[in-house]
Structures are given as C-alpha cells and as structure tokens.
Length: 227
Image (cartoon, rainbow, N blue to C red):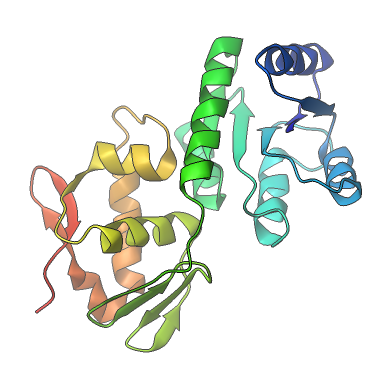
C-alpha cells in the first residue's frame, strides 16, 4: 500500500491511478491530519509514503519530522514532492530522513521508477542484528547507536548511514557520487558538497575517531586503517 499526501486533487488522483495501474495499492490524503488518522487506524502500515511539501496545515517537512520521530513509522520510506526544487529543501528533507525527492512537475513513469527504486533499497537494507567494532568505534545497527571510546554520540540519520557504510567496507574508497547514490538515493549532479558537509559534521561528532575517516584527494573518502 502506497499513501499519497497531496492537496491538489487532480495530481493526487493521477498519482493514485498510475500506482494502481503499476500493480500497487494506493490511497490518497489531502493533508497530514488525514495521513496520521489513517496510520493510527490501519492495522497494516504503508510500504511507502509520497509526501508533498506544500500542504494545508502542517507542511511536509513537519510531517516528515513526526514520521521519523515515531518508532512506529520511522522505517516507512518517504519520497518528498516539491514545486520548489531548491537544494535547501532537498538537503533538509534528506537529512531529516526522506528517501528521495521528486520535483514538480514530474512524469508518472519517473514517479513509478523512483517508488520501485526506494522499495528495493528498503527491502535490501533491512536492519540486521549486527554490531560492528573498529578501533574505538562501536556501531550497533538495530539500536542505531554509536559509541566512541565507550561514550554514546548522537548522529543524524544520514550521518549514521554514512558511518555504517564506511564501517561495513573498511579501506574501500567511495567517490562523492557513489556516497550520494548509496545514502541519499538521488543523483545530485554538481552538488557533491552535500557529502563534504556531512562528512565534516560526522568527523566532529566522532571526536578522536573522526580521523578514521580519511580523505582520498581527488576521489572521495574511506575508513582507513586503524593504527
């Protein structure tokens, strides 16, 4: 089941029609209050939520924050739709936990392709009962907890996913474009500074272990040898 939150009824009906003809079940909602009422009353959570930013009442960013703050809904993938298409909206939305972005006007074939891509990632990224330890770094995947020399540090969703990717692949060099594709799930042509900003904040939060994340000049980043 795909939930579509869009206040323009003509766009919403088109999205629902496209999803249903592509084999998905879909339901539409005008605003956040209708969405949360459905989530609360339904026995089964949606597979994915299509969420417009510009909505009556609470905007899409506020709704996204509420979804990701609630343990019952934080794992539901969210694709944001916006008429703005600004880098600021994308960075804030993706850092809050959005899985992808669609900029209006978008084609229905593009929407279906992105829905399928996000659902594939969600299916292959199910959290395992895994604890990874490298040097003084301890990453508890199911608890989404990170310890630095025994002290817990609080990371954003994207910072956690970056660190997890590095710790699962020590010594592997990731280009900025690869990191954008793997963590943000979206092609940010010319916007690789998003990665640099997140790497910078991640290093700061990891304190003395921040040095583990090495810059490979002209290429990207890796988790280097610990010694």
